[in-house]
Length: 262
Length: 376
Image (tube, rainbow over all chains, first blue to last red; front, side, top):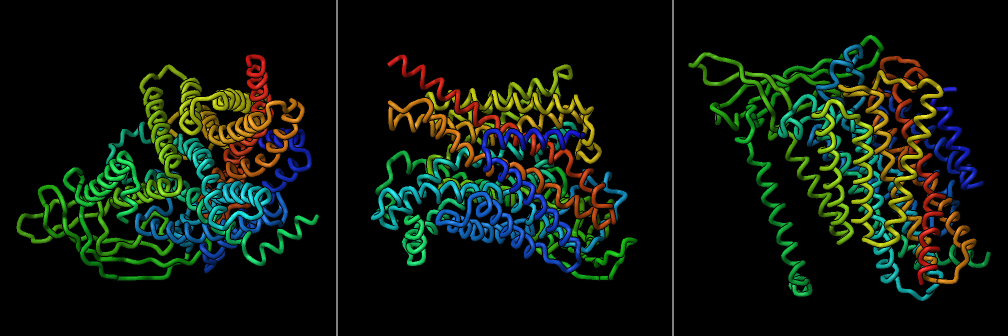
């Protein structure tokens, strides 16, 4: 058995020990997400497959797995799902604009040497791929934050059925503010860990500050971190608004009623 | 607008004015900072498409090759104000190259030329990207401040402080050749945890419980990973594709794993301790058994989503490299094991840390509550 199998087995056992059925489900969600990601990458190798469109399709599948498979379709996950997709679309537009302007797609000069054996004229639009990478690395945090806001909003509505739409929204925002710091931290440290080798390289090559900030690799990493932060912040008002709207709409009230009965 | 300003306290007003001043001055600075660079910078004035042709590589991938004639104006140095002629060749996929537009700013190399010619010639070295980094940074700051207000400000501060600590720690590592990166990271991890959690959550017992749970969880998951790596002699880990490596790769990998899972583990620890303490504060007579049951229930809910966050943050970075491999007709399994083994190992090690922190956070919080119960 190799390292990955060992770690995977340990993770599965721990998840089942602590989480029971939910734990096993979380582990399989991870596995399904991996499959979705892999299929998306394979589709992107087909010429003329637009990376933006397929990123959106993949995001929809991944949000379904993270929200509907792990939890189930209910009054909490529906608004969380709609908000996640909306945030992803807005974020995607912004990121495509920024990657195009800052020209951070593809690989940096520092990587040219090790890529020597590859053909680089492969007919895939790497500007769009760069945008897709940033969205994909944030999507886990986006769906998590959406769920973490819509779930307590449902509780608040349960305890105060007469709460107004505006109060519900304000409550959602205050919940979001409390988790913003830790969600952002989770992503920041994940990126710090991934970029450690890169940071050491820049220090070893004794790049000047001006060279570092303008280099493709470093600026693309910084822009990724910042866009991820923007994503987890943006999902907060969007989820609070959509959930408040949904709970007070006719369709939402219908679903809430049927849930209360069971 | 006016009533909005009147409602703000004096301190808030000063803070907003300060932020606005920083914003304006930094944006102005990056737009006119040419003279601070030693490398010549040229701003593209005019571009002309000279040539374009269809290419097919040895794997049958179709692409388009373009050639562009550029006239640009030098913005700094002795040749400031003079025009320079540049040539740019780019592909439609743009892995290493790109199309330039009027207004793009480039770092260029100026060829030595005879005195009498009016226009210079040269070659393009890189794009000037500082403008965009600053703009995205400001959008990030504004959105975090608008959405998160005080909490937003605290997360910006925590990001900045942690980045500084990391940079300083790496400086120490590179200057003192004897010390191990892992030891330096261990010290930094303690600093990161204490600072981030104190910033996000304030000085109270909830935070102390979360700090202890985070540190135990991270060290334990690192230990397990290290043990597994020793046991299997690192079978299945492919370090060849680890990018930008100038130092012993195994240590860098372990250190990255250490730091990478820290944020997620902190998140779990603080969620656990906040909710346990919250339950206790609501009802001081709650039994330990009930606390354990609710704690585990909360833990189950967050475990799946937290491992997901780490998974996507790690794996997504490999998408461009995977595409390049696939398009160069590399076999599926070879491509995956070459490019994803380290990322998957990292994601799973982080997942182990997350799951372990759930009971750790639970029992440490209960321990703190029991001690408090005895006191009062």
